[in-house]
Length: 265
Image (tube, rainbow, N blue to C red; front, side, top):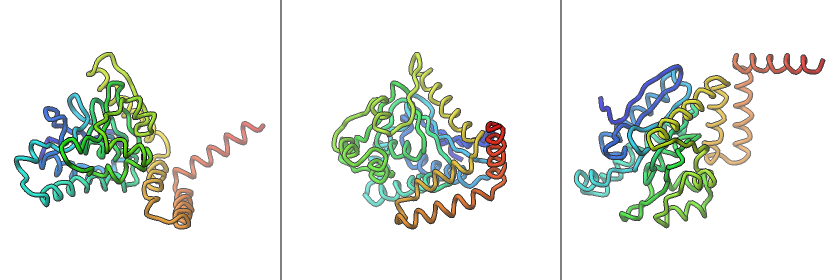
């Protein structure tokens, strides 16, 4: 089994680690298939209630490995197939009812941007840079970038990224709504550790709360474009009804009612 993408489960958190640091965690064939398999496992396992994506080395993900693509792939159909394998993992994460947090230290570019947007909550470092850069090598956005970027930051800003070679600073990425939090460190290594630590705190916050409700809230928001407004209202109504009957919700509602009654005395 490939070690280019690692997977471990600890106390309810499924940690997916991109582990090709010498290539800035860029995707080649081996990484693509490992990514597909690890994400599927994370989504399917009952002992995983929240998912954390992080990366080894000095950057989160540089997208596709252009050198490997140029030497091992000689047709557009091979590139399409390659992207399709990675897309299977993206779909596993984005359509699941499990919340996903990303620890994206260092640089995220190209298809790495799509991997970042697989997460529902992203943490980056103060030194981090985020951008598209596809056109620099004559290629077009893939790995969900064209599908998710405009939804995340708006069409006009999405166009600014894909039509220029601009890399956003961490602060700009947060201001644009592309990432949720920025954390700092004394140096690049300590900052990467701080990003991973904060992302784990986010995942543990979900686990300490109504994890299933967070997951269903994520699913409702993520899947909304596939439904009309009336259909979305119906889906919301059905989901909250199902949530109401769960033991977790019943216990939390009872505790809320008891606390409210005590406060009113």
